[in-house]
Amino acid sequence: MSIQSKDVEYVAKLARLNLTDQEREKFTEQLNAILQYAEKLNELDTDGVEPTTHVLRLSNVMREDVVQESLSKEKVFRNAPEEEDGQFKVPAVLE
Image (tube, rainbow, N blue to C red; front, top):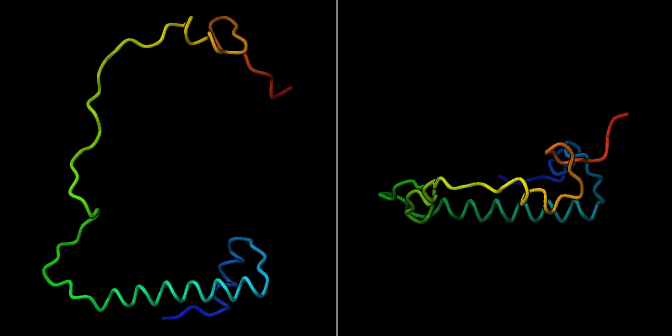
């Protein structure tokens, strides 16, 4: 499989990109190089290799949730530019 210049132009149009002729040629070459590498990977003997989603065997790497006190209102509003009635006051966006 190979990418043609017209394919790059089509994708660029979908992405609303205006490519120069040089950019179109460069991207065509780069995409073809990527496809050639992928085809080379198909030559490898993968019999007996289990499919994986990650190269390392990972279990849940998330920490346990720990219940703790949250910040007090005083600490929260200490860095706020403005506060009014226990809420952050921001400039109006609508009239």
